[in-house]
Length: 385
Image 1 (tube, rainbow, N blue to C red):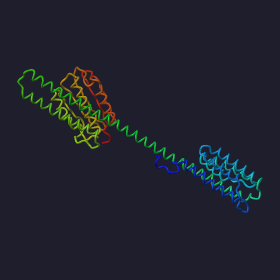
Image 2: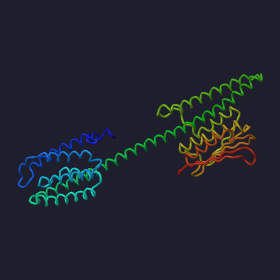
Image 3: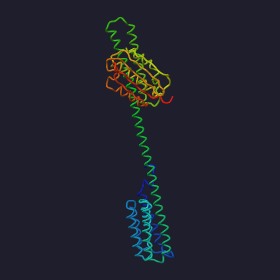
Image 4: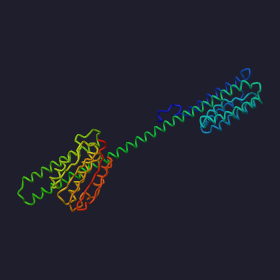
């Protein structure tokens, strides 16, 4: 904001020096033509001394406006008494402007009233013949000084408010950007976890089958080739998904690979079948198009749960049921294994499933089944369809 300021705000010392010089010039000129009728006076050293002293203190009017006003008024009264004519209050009115600009219109009016009272009293004592002309000039110039100072104070307050709003807006923008970056990092971390955990689990299982066939000396070259082919296909798919996800880190473009959804559950079940886990997929209710966020979250929840079954459940069968209600999609993934099922491992997968459900306004519950095995149940809102 500082680069957009007016030059007089960027160079206050230059402005102060200019104010002092201009006030000194005007003060000397007004003293030379003062009186009634206006006559040219010869200025004496005491006149120059007063003008120089009264204008010099204006250099610190920003820091001590009230003190400068008091000094200039006292100098004007003393000078008028010494010279026997009405005091010259121009430096005092400049100081009065500084008071109004620093303290506000009320303080300026109060200081102006004191200045006028002092000026009128001094003029009545020292030069009563010049009273009428001096009072009119004093009232007018004093009112202008107070009004100008109060206006400048209002304008400064307005500019300060705009600058503060701009700073707050910039801070809010940065915080929002940081929040969005954090959310994107979490989302990418979830995607990486899902892809790596799922695909590598399948590849590991299929590689184990291939190794078993080779080391067992079984004469099944066709099955061995088929297993290795599945390993190649699954690794290729994993690499494609990883490239799609990692690509988000370097470009804002939409990834080319399609985002997996519930319509690909059969393909997902087939991939697990190649690794030795039979997955039964059932659908209840009227299947229909669901919101994209719910579609992706539901797919990833099923994928994570089946991955945990394959790794920890010690069983060869898992069941997935999609139940389409009026406004909720209920997903149940269950197994009858004797192992730890979907709750095995570090627990990061179950946390990820709950986070995905919460992101779309749903929830996930998981636990051991009474008859053995483990189940994961997700309830995802469909909205008004």
